[in-house]
Length: 185
Image (tube, rainbow, N blue to C red):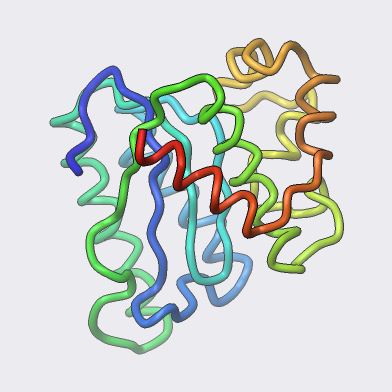
């Protein structure tokens, strides 16, 4: 699926052969800096989570042509840096990135919750706020961020409602089932 301007998307990909794409903390930081440099100027970011072997972003594309060019440069830049740093060759990611269009309010809140719950579901942390490579802690903080934080909080009905919605425990099968239902719509 090609990403179009003025549309919302769940953007994701994983490591080739489901292998790691982040090998140490510095990689996560570099990934986010490269994303900010190459991709963020052409989209609004609402949520993200970087997992050891995959990543998720929830974005709204502002300029599809510049976004496509930026994301291509982003993947090339990150892959070259990782390959050089770890003396590896070849593809780091499993093919082209994937996008699923977000077309309903219920899918909007579900995808944000799904993205933020990834580290808990994977048992990397017990609490979402403890995972530093997710946008969830930024929503609890007063620090400046590039996220469209207020827009998201408004969609959830405020910070308290945002937190409560995230506390709802959906098991992985239920989350996957709900996402598949909305993707078919």
